[in-house]
Length: 321
Image 1 (cartoon, rainbow, N blue to C red):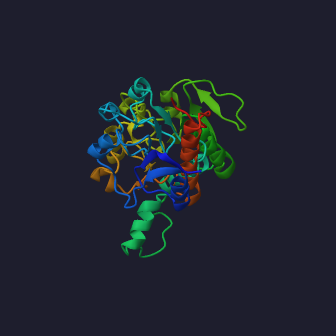
Image 2: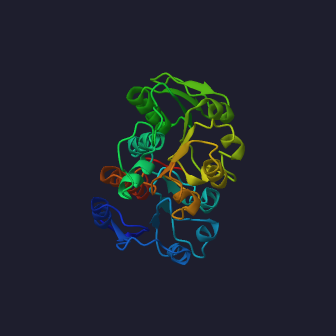
Image 3: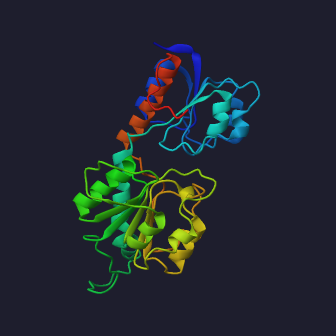
């Protein structure tokens, strides 16, 4: 039944089934041209809407949440991460915040695996050579990559996505897995050794894959950590751009301190530093970890499940605060 009194603002275009469900249930304002909303637009929305459905690219900071005459009661964020929202201010203001975990686990792990293979096999350099018509003949010695079978994958953050990536690496690629996690991870259904520090994983692994949330006061993976990587190592990030010191990562890549990288996320999206874009030993994706129709639809539907539960006074399926 449509709740004509509950006003919902959606900041970006969503898959049609999600928008149709919102139209049927709420007095909703959709973003049909899919252009990012400005800070002033978001600020104005606080006093006009009961619910906000943003994405991880929308920065909902303290100044927005403290807008005069704030009417907003819930932010149903579309994404696992919620570091785009000032959680402390939302808590003080009594604004509920939800996210969309679980539904994108497999899709993001797939992209992590794709980046592992693309970086170790130098896929970008090979494709660029072909597209630029520089492929003159078959060679047994040019453009060689690195096999991953029997190599060690180091995972930083053994949550749902980290575990899904580990399974793919072990059972699909024949890799050994080591990992770092802030808390003890027990009862895994695959063989993996937990290390006590990030440095230990960095020093031991042939490939390092990041699966931690961003949003801290400083990057979790800093220059000191990156310096521990082997010269033959590869660095993969499908988590958040701001969980890694991006300048330090560019430095170790441009100076040849590590063999390569595969990145789906960046510190200041959608800006990607030119130094990264010019490197042929780096595979770069435009934040497509969850970019399948099935997953993006499921994310949107979970956000609506949270809205429905909130306005019906029920337990929220994926409440952050």
